[in-house]
Length: 240
Image (cartoon, rainbow, N blue to C red; front, side, top):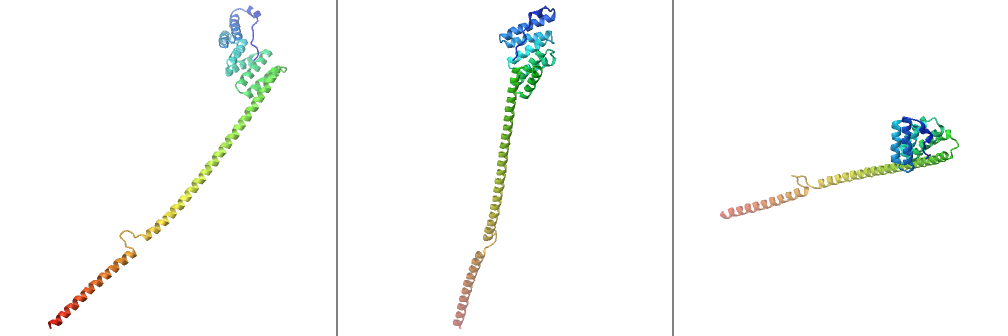
């Protein structure tokens, strides 16, 4: 991070609100140097309440926010300073710190753009050039990881599809085999039904047995009748 603005004592010749807001900036700078960044933030905010056009208060507020890892908020502050400042040094530093805030937030492409803006203003800034190279490297790593994740997701999806297709084939095969078994069982059942007598019906064997029994019974009856007739005939002859 670039150094915060330390307000020169020459500026305190101003009177009124201008002097009051600088008092809060100076207090914030002291707190910042003691690494009391939260209280420094409050001092810079008080300065901005008095003078919302204070570029120095906005810039230093951005630094205090950055030190608290509030990178999104610090980026907003540095963006404001970079857009409104008419001083090239301040503008270049604001773009540099904007790049740092975006880099910490893993917004690598945006940080690259910010560093490039800083270098347009100050092409000889080696620190910004180094940070730019680092941001490009991080962006490439991020893109490589995203491509790897996409490929992994694609492979996982293909595996999932293969498994689903295999399951469908297995299910279809099982249904086909089940259908065959059902047909086989139907044929088997038909055969059994042909062999077994239907309700209230006799098999050929049972009918033959009953017929034979009736024939035997008829023969017995005929035999008895024959004997009876012969006996009666004999008795008549004796009576004569």
